[in-house]
Length: 305
Image 1 (cartoon, one colour):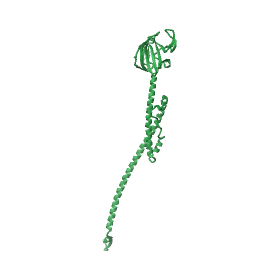
Image 2 (cartoon, one colour; image 1 turned 90 degrees about the horizontal axis):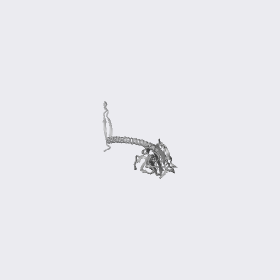
Image 3 (cartoon, rainbow, N blue to C red; image 1 turned 30 degrees about the vertical axis):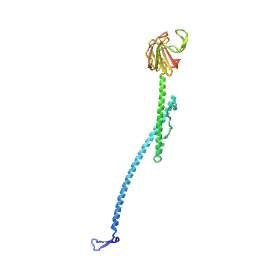
Image 4 (cartoon, rainbow, N blue to C red; image 1 turned 60 degrees about the vertical axis):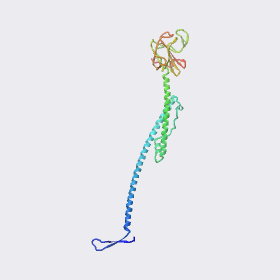
């Protein structure tokens, strides 16, 4: 029954002839199915095309994001390289300072990290090329940043050690007698002499500097006043401990301006010249003692009038 046919009569306008068209019964059904199939294909193709456009846009967005990240990574690599160059210069300067100060590298806590990294920015870019091996670049970048942090820590510790050494040196220099304690001619030098009172040959453990009574007496270095006393030979005496085994003594004073336990600075006025004790006239008896042994003060002094 499904193979039956339809006869369609066609009457052309302006003629009496009749044309017949035989159509299978299934043709309308097939045309409908074909039409629906075409509709579904168009709808499915449109959906697929829309998804394709969406995926293409997302892919382009991700590509742009990767490009931007690569640019940022390259910039970071260049900064790391510049920092590494600066750290190398600082390390060389630090080494020179340690050599001058006599500070051994082993005395600094920690150790200088191995010098890794790139010789140039171009090398970093070659490693960083995503088409080559981006993971290797990232690992290298992290390793170099860690090395720079370790190097910075070492330099900080080394600088602290140098600061300690230089501070000790500054303290030692400030504590070393380096001035004449007063203005005036040296009337009796260090060493053996004929005593001006007894006439006997004996050892003179300091310098005698003459001047008018009341002439200012100044500390020749930083230190701590440990004694202000009257002794039969020295008269009014001020004794200053400068540390590092150094002591200075100022005798025959008319007046003391300091007290035991007082810290003083180089150049500070500590007393006035006088004629106390065994003395033939107004003058200062000045001694420098190193580890308990009197030494010639001239070795330490730079005259300042």
